Amino acid sequence: MSFPATFLRTFVSVWLLVLAARAATLVPMGGEWRHFKGTAAPSPGAPEAWLLNGFNDTTWAQGTAPFHYGETAFSGVGTVLSDMQNLYSTVYLRRSFRINDPALVQTLTLRAQIDDGFIVWINGRRVATVNAPATDAASTNGAIALTTVEYGAPVEYDLGTPSGYLIAGVNT
Image 1 (cartoon, rainbow, N blue to C red):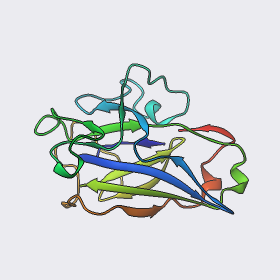
Image 2: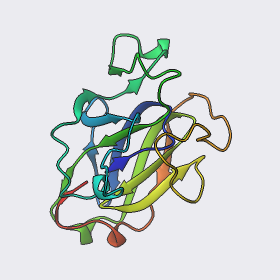
Image 3: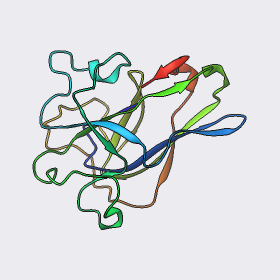
Image 4: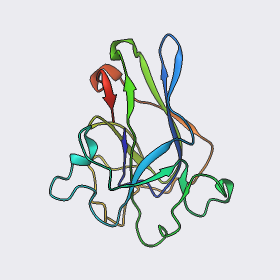
Protein backbone atom coordinates (compact mmCIF):
# COMPACT_ATOMS: atom_id res chain seq x y z
CA MET A 1 0.00 0.00 0.00
CA SER A 2 1.36 3.37 -0.91
CA PHE A 3 0.25 6.69 0.42
CA PRO A 4 1.24 9.91 -0.90
CA ALA A 5 0.86 11.56 -1.20
CA THR A 6 0.68 14.57 -2.68
CA PHE A 7 -2.11 15.24 -0.33
CA LEU A 8 -0.95 14.12 2.98
CA ARG A 9 -0.13 17.14 5.08
CA THR A 10 -0.31 15.54 8.47
CA PHE A 11 -0.78 11.85 8.28
CA VAL A 12 -1.79 10.92 11.76
CA SER A 13 -2.66 7.26 11.64
CA VAL A 14 -3.47 4.46 9.31
CA TRP A 15 -4.23 0.82 9.38
CA LEU A 16 -5.96 -1.63 7.06
CA LEU A 17 -8.62 -4.16 7.87
CA VAL A 18 -9.69 -7.03 5.70
CA LEU A 19 -13.32 -7.86 6.28
CA ALA A 20 -14.08 -11.26 4.79
CA ALA A 21 -15.40 -14.36 6.52
CA ARG A 22 -13.35 -13.20 9.51
CA ALA A 23 -11.89 -9.75 9.97
CA ALA A 24 -8.10 -9.63 9.97
CA THR A 25 -5.82 -6.66 10.52
CA LEU A 26 -3.24 -6.39 7.76
CA VAL A 27 -1.47 -3.25 8.90
CA PRO A 28 -1.85 -2.55 12.60
CA MET A 29 -2.08 0.87 14.19
CA GLY A 30 1.41 1.73 15.32
CA GLY A 31 2.99 -0.40 12.61
CA GLU A 32 6.26 0.37 10.85
CA TRP A 33 6.21 2.23 7.52
CA ARG A 34 8.83 3.46 5.08
CA HIS A 35 8.44 7.20 4.50
CA PHE A 36 9.89 9.84 2.22
CA LYS A 37 9.58 13.58 2.77
CA GLY A 38 8.06 15.37 -0.20
CA THR A 39 10.88 17.81 -0.78
CA ALA A 40 11.62 15.97 -4.07
CA ALA A 41 10.08 13.22 -6.19
CA PRO A 42 10.26 9.82 -4.47
CA SER A 43 11.40 8.03 -7.65
CA PRO A 44 13.08 10.56 -9.98
CA GLY A 45 13.04 9.60 -13.64
CA ALA A 46 10.25 7.07 -13.04
CA PRO A 47 7.44 9.00 -11.33
CA GLU A 48 5.20 6.01 -10.63
CA ALA A 49 7.91 3.47 -9.71
CA TRP A 50 7.51 4.10 -5.98
CA LEU A 51 3.91 2.84 -6.19
CA LEU A 52 4.87 -0.67 -7.30
CA ASN A 53 5.81 -3.81 -5.35
CA GLY A 54 9.32 -4.08 -6.77
CA PHE A 55 10.42 -0.55 -5.86
CA ASN A 56 13.49 -0.50 -3.62
CA ASP A 57 12.57 1.73 -0.67
CA THR A 58 15.45 0.71 1.60
CA THR A 59 16.92 4.24 1.43
CA TRP A 60 13.66 5.70 2.76
CA ALA A 61 13.41 6.40 6.47
CA GLN A 62 11.47 4.00 8.63
CA GLY A 63 8.99 5.15 11.25
CA THR A 64 6.05 4.11 13.36
CA ALA A 65 2.51 5.30 12.69
CA PRO A 66 1.01 7.72 13.40
CA PHE A 67 3.01 10.27 11.35
CA HIS A 68 2.33 13.83 12.46
CA TYR A 69 3.57 17.26 13.38
CA GLY A 70 2.12 19.51 16.01
CA GLU A 71 -0.77 17.24 17.00
CA THR A 72 -0.73 17.28 20.79
CA ALA A 73 -3.09 14.30 20.87
CA PHE A 74 -0.20 12.19 19.57
CA SER A 75 2.52 13.63 21.80
CA GLY A 76 5.05 10.91 22.54
CA VAL A 77 3.73 8.39 19.99
CA GLY A 78 4.48 7.66 16.37
CA THR A 79 6.82 9.54 14.07
CA VAL A 80 7.03 13.29 14.51
CA LEU A 81 7.79 15.18 11.29
CA SER A 82 9.08 18.24 13.10
CA ASP A 83 10.49 19.81 9.93
CA MET A 84 7.31 19.42 7.84
CA GLN A 85 5.49 22.68 8.55
CA ASN A 86 6.24 25.29 5.87
CA LEU A 87 8.89 23.04 4.26
CA TYR A 88 6.95 20.24 2.54
CA SER A 89 3.28 19.33 2.25
CA THR A 90 3.66 15.75 1.08
CA VAL A 91 4.74 12.59 2.85
CA TYR A 92 5.06 9.39 0.85
CA LEU A 93 4.39 6.24 2.86
CA ARG A 94 4.94 2.60 1.84
CA ARG A 95 3.95 -0.59 3.59
CA SER A 96 3.75 -4.16 2.33
CA PHE A 97 1.39 -6.86 3.54
CA ARG A 98 0.81 -10.47 2.56
CA ILE A 99 -2.39 -11.97 1.15
CA ASN A 100 -2.26 -15.72 0.59
CA ASP A 101 -5.48 -16.01 -1.39
CA PRO A 102 -6.92 -12.73 -2.69
CA ALA A 103 -10.08 -14.52 -3.82
CA LEU A 104 -11.02 -14.87 -0.14
CA VAL A 105 -10.90 -11.11 0.45
CA GLN A 106 -14.41 -9.75 -0.01
CA THR A 107 -13.81 -6.20 1.20
CA LEU A 108 -10.88 -4.07 2.22
CA THR A 109 -11.26 -1.08 4.51
CA LEU A 110 -8.82 1.67 5.43
CA ARG A 111 -9.30 3.31 8.80
CA ALA A 112 -7.42 6.60 8.98
CA GLN A 113 -7.20 9.94 10.69
CA ILE A 114 -6.07 12.68 8.36
CA ASP A 115 -5.35 16.36 8.19
CA ASP A 116 -6.15 17.64 4.73
CA GLY A 117 -6.17 14.58 2.48
CA PHE A 118 -4.58 11.55 0.88
CA ILE A 119 -4.40 9.22 -2.08
CA VAL A 120 -4.02 5.48 -1.52
CA TRP A 121 -2.54 3.11 -4.07
CA ILE A 122 -2.31 -0.66 -3.73
CA ASN A 123 0.03 -2.38 -6.16
CA GLY A 124 0.12 0.76 -8.30
CA ARG A 125 -3.65 1.13 -8.54
CA ARG A 126 -5.31 4.21 -7.07
CA VAL A 127 -7.97 2.81 -4.71
CA ALA A 128 -9.01 5.74 -2.50
CA THR A 129 -8.73 9.50 -2.21
CA VAL A 130 -9.87 12.10 0.23
CA ASN A 131 -9.85 15.76 -0.69
CA ALA A 132 -7.55 15.26 -3.68
CA PRO A 133 -7.80 16.29 -7.32
CA ALA A 134 -8.60 13.69 -9.97
CA THR A 135 -4.99 13.68 -11.16
CA ASP A 136 -1.86 13.28 -9.10
CA ALA A 137 -0.02 16.52 -8.39
CA ALA A 138 3.72 17.06 -8.21
CA SER A 139 5.33 16.53 -4.82
CA THR A 140 6.33 20.17 -4.62
CA ASN A 141 2.88 21.53 -5.48
CA GLY A 142 1.92 23.97 -2.75
CA ALA A 143 -1.81 24.00 -3.48
CA ILE A 144 -2.49 20.43 -2.55
CA ALA A 145 -5.82 19.77 -0.95
CA LEU A 146 -9.05 21.01 -2.51
CA THR A 147 -10.35 22.19 0.87
CA THR A 148 -9.15 22.08 4.45
CA VAL A 149 -9.95 18.91 6.37
CA GLU A 150 -8.81 19.14 9.96
CA TYR A 151 -7.71 16.28 12.14
CA GLY A 152 -10.61 14.40 13.68
CA ALA A 153 -11.83 10.99 14.67
CA PRO A 154 -10.77 7.97 12.58
CA VAL A 155 -12.89 7.36 9.49
CA GLU A 156 -13.31 4.12 7.55
CA TYR A 157 -12.87 4.18 3.78
CA ASP A 158 -14.06 1.38 1.50
CA LEU A 159 -11.25 0.45 -0.90
CA GLY A 160 -13.47 -0.90 -3.67
CA THR A 161 -13.31 -4.41 -5.09
CA PRO A 162 -10.07 -6.03 -3.85
CA SER A 163 -10.01 -8.58 -6.68
CA GLY A 164 -9.13 -5.69 -9.00
CA TYR A 165 -5.81 -4.94 -7.30
CA LEU A 166 -4.77 -7.59 -4.74
CA ILE A 167 -2.36 -10.35 -5.73
CA ALA A 168 -1.34 -13.58 -4.02
CA GLY A 169 1.75 -12.90 -1.94
CA VAL A 170 3.23 -9.50 -1.14
CA ASN A 171 1.10 -6.44 -1.84
CA THR A 172 2.29 -2.85 -1.44
